[in-house]
Length: 136
Image 1: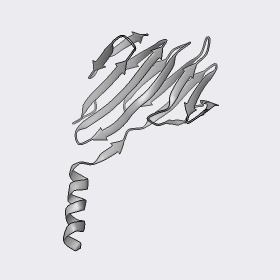
Image 2: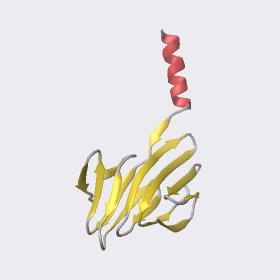
Image 3: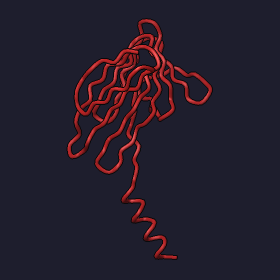
């Protein structure tokens, strides 16, 4: 029994997944998130999880921090957080942009490979350390 437990711990440490933090650092205007079936106002300091949908209203925006990177969800946008995790030497974050626009400033992390992907109904964009704007 002890051998099985030790082997399990070794495998777990080898293939470990850690959640990246998706933190709201600023909100302007009407910004909501849908987690499950209800919509709630998004406020500074909220933590975003995979599956959360962020929606901004007219003249509104939200600034999110994912690891060392910053994502600004602009007005009249609906975006789903798909993945936020750290595995071995990789930081992986992925969002689905249903409608609207986001700007992202993806920063490198020391000794880590950073992958940030934005999917839209028409295209998928992936970066590893740059800034840009994606429209859907």
